[in-house]
Length: 418
Image 1 (cartoon, helix red, strand yellow):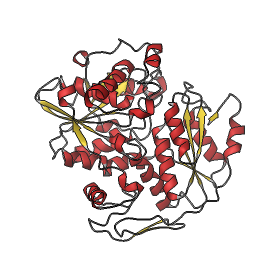
Image 2 (cartoon, helix red, strand yellow):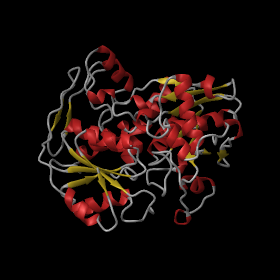
Image 3 (cartoon, rainbow, N blue to C red):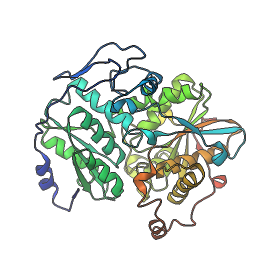
Image 4 (tube, rainbow, N blue to C red):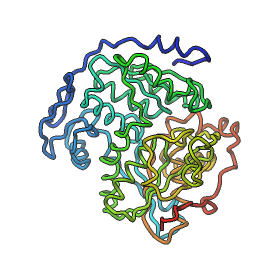
């Protein structure tokens, strides 16, 4: 783990600009689907039948249905990436719905192999870069992350024989930092709370490193990489629509890169334009003011919040408000105590963004007459045992007793949204 102090940017960048020697390798496959990793066009696929699923569930070329992937999982041994996606959906209406005519379902994205929804985009973005020739043999993958994408990128690199460097900040939990290191790569921990245009902001560190050595380093650039949203359009959206038999009326999700919200909503609205998408955004994030109050990006003021992986200090290029209809302004305490409620009443440990999403879905359920709300549980609470599920930390942060009732929450709607 690396900590960055002022003025040391050049030093730590030079420390990491060393070309890897690990070559790409042929990846073992399941159910007779062959995938050879070569250079420069890395991915070669043979046609697959429904029962012949290759291990790259969310690659840039694969169109195999998620149902087929689930069939492969239940039909025999599979390889790592077959575990990505096809997550179950649970009914949490009895705990969170404020209206008997409104169902609330939650996708268990914490069941992805690295423990978060970000597995969907990591393999997709890496494989798209390999397919396009941008990520070449011998290059090291560099990714700025609030934590979960870092672990997902690490996993995606591990199964492809790639070296990686992930950059996060001090807000990231120690559990997530350790998980990013566990796959064999390097982790840089930058300052937290620095302005978005500061050279030591974790996103800018990625860009600086890549700019200085473009021949050896490939930047994922997840906040402006449109393969991010595309991964959700091709996987999460179809899964939700199929699992609800097309009866979904509202989709609720927090946003950091904008990929989950934009990509999933884009697919759902392509199937039914009447489906409404609602962003759950924590107080302090600039996304709320940009969407609700039309504050220009250059005039946005960043606050503070503790929920990891959601909210933003700038407007990411992946995010498109064209696919968003409403917003709910959540808070740390309500989100964290919602996580504890899920643990004590449903027996599931989820992270803070899951609490944010569920609280927003609960608020929404009290504002509509009938419908079916679907939200996501992006990651596991195992990643936050030192924070959300630690009484001392919660007391120290002043969250105890500060949670808000969903009945008192509000939803902001675009003027053209029903």
